[in-house]
Length: 89
Image (cartoon, rainbow, N blue to C red):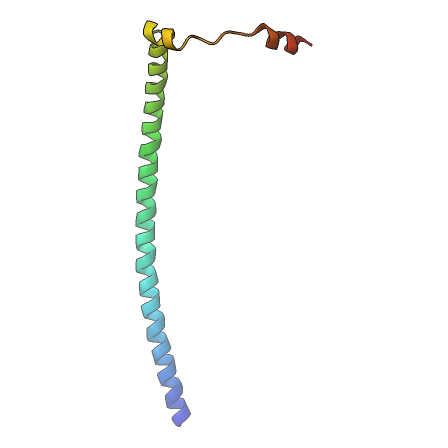
């Protein structure tokens, strides 16, 4: 009879522990999902801003290439005739 009482106590304690662990894991999973959503929203905003900044950089590059002072300090690259001859061979 004593072993039956010990078994009941063991199963009662293990059932309580299982419920507590399940509750803790549920809370942790809830916060992980919430953090994942936040990371997704942040990455979407960054992708949109990268597209905007790419357009800005291309526009800035075009404006700099057309600038006389910029061309004085950084002349446009010349096309080499040697490389064209090597490509023909």
